[in-house]
Image 1 (cartoon, rainbow, N blue to C red):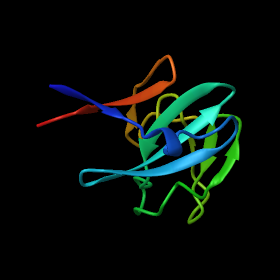
Image 2: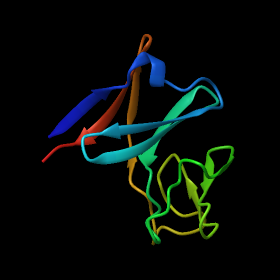
Image 3: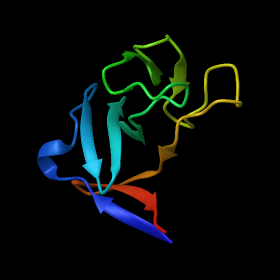
Length: 104
């Protein structure tokens, strides 16, 4: 089952910015890149470091701990599909932003 989480208006990142969200027991990072929203787990799959504060280059986030780079669109490590951070679909309806999470 999919659950839609409505991002509070004050947490919706402006163009080029990011927001940190806690949804249930998940820590997520929400990015607004070129007017497109991307949501990922705020936990590098390599050793669990936070991705929220990583260097952003376009839609690629670089882990602060070991420099691994992930595509925000699909969560995959750049040039590989073997390691990936969980990414979540984001839906925009008017001024509302929703992150779709799998429940259960």
